[in-house]
Amino acid sequence: MNKREFLKSSALLGAGLAAGFTQINRGVTTSGFKYVDTTLNQAGEYVLPALPYAYNALEPYIDEATMKLHHDIHHAGYVKGLNNATKKVGEAMDSGDFSLIKHWERELAFHGAGHFLHSLFWKNMGPSAGKRSQNLEQYLSKSFGSFDRFVALFKQATTAVEGSGWGILAYQHEADRLVVLQAEKHQNLTQWITIPVLVCDVWEHAYYLKYQNKRADYVTAFMQVVNWDAVSENLDQAIK
Image 1 (tube, rainbow, N blue to C red):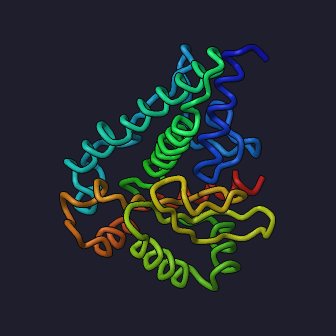
Image 2 (image 1 turned 90 degrees about the vertical axis):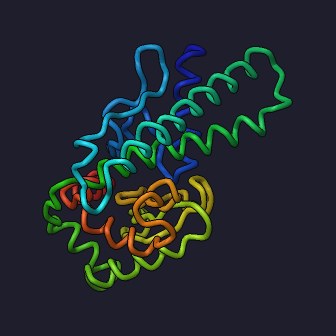
């Protein structure tokens, strides 16, 4: 493995673990789970994925202005920060000066987690609700008792995230079950072995233009635009 390949793989691993993911290589985990279509460009830099639908496709639940700000400014900022942190870690290895490595590792975790969670977030939603697969239904029933019990838990846990963060439905491989988790910021309160299959962004930039401080209303609206086909596919790939 040459230096460039090492930088790629180590940065991907650090960013992925920070978000509770397994090892990622060009957007695919070791289990075959694919979060993003294109992780790196030919220069080895992380890239901002395009939205899989129009900015106004989720109206009236998620407004066009928020989608533009969220994707084009905030998510793009995480990609920029991740590329910069990756570069700085590489420079530290080149120079042998690791005096700021604690800072740049935090930056790597923060921006990397933000990038990969947002990449999953866009695909979690869509103008069509799709249909929950039989496999997803079985896992929801096994893990929570029923779909309605899952929705109640997911909405309450996501609304109750302290400060900024995420609500996450994740697959726990060792127990072969689904769990609902909270994440403060992006990289905190993580269960390392879990693989997210559905995430809801509850940083204020995700909802404040339309919902102001009514986070619960936003979470309820989010549930109206979940693309269950995508969630079902995520679960199937995570289980493999």
